[in-house]
Image (cartoon, rainbow, N blue to C red; front, side, top):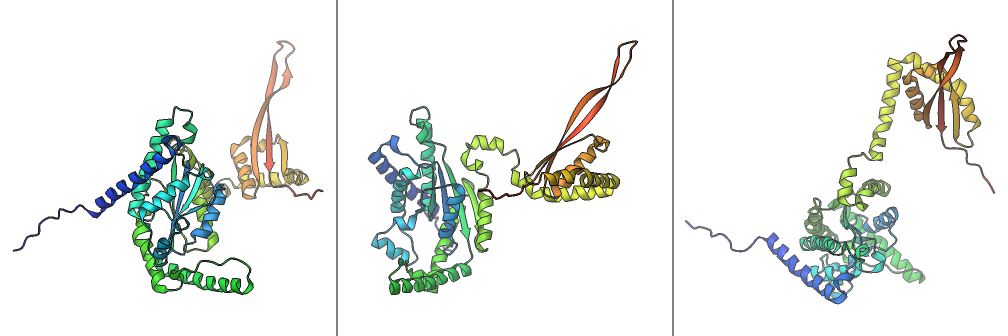
Length: 399
């Protein structure tokens, strides 16, 4: 019987980590020696945008920059690698070496225009790059601690890394790549004929289904897994990019809506996150409002009708008079509102109809009888219900 001796070779993952450590140390030491440790200034916020070929990274990069208020241009890794060798590798659907990618990227990130935020398109794409990214984050934290009590502290802020992945399936990716190829050929033909405009890059992968498929599978087997591995470390968002562009962008807005999670110190955010987000409450508010109004009809039908009559007869004429301003203040002493349920009904009715209503109860002691013998004054409580109704006013054309 033949026995198999255990392999003395370390697992591939261990080799990749060791390779990443060597690569990162070479690049970092070189950078530190060139500019000095005190000058290693990097953006506070990095949005790392990854996506399958044809997922719309180019289109959505501009959209993300707009909603995040980022004025600096995106750092597109493929544009950093313009050597003939790099172009040949990309044309075949492959990728450029990790060390060169890291070297070019870190130097780009030190440019003053990226002081606050930067969008990275196409990084990380491999497990080695993922490990380098982790080490880069650790170095930024180390720099922050080192310079926290120095005049340089404002250059070393709490870093935030934000991972966003746009995903389409293989068939959709291939279709979009080939469609882009057809559109590029038409565009370039028009430019050559008219002499107007700029020629667009003609990628081999946009014309050959096999190369397009290979490019997608390279992403799926290497880049996608690399990005997913960061899910437990950094802010991570998965966007289904197969939907129409307006739906995709609404999903992006929702993912990036709560900017505090990106800008606050993590310890601060951990405390604040106990308070629910406004959009979470709003999503459920409409159904809850409907349930309450239906409940009034079942449990307090006469009170509901009385409040509706009060609004129609006594409030709406005043509200209409102030329709231009979109603001009406109405005072009432109607005993209908002694019942707090009536106040709740009134506010909910206005909310359902698109108004914003609030009611403030002003209490005042009013003399009712004076005893001449004892000098005692008897009073009664006067309640004034101050109702504020807000709505979108008329847009009057001026000028």
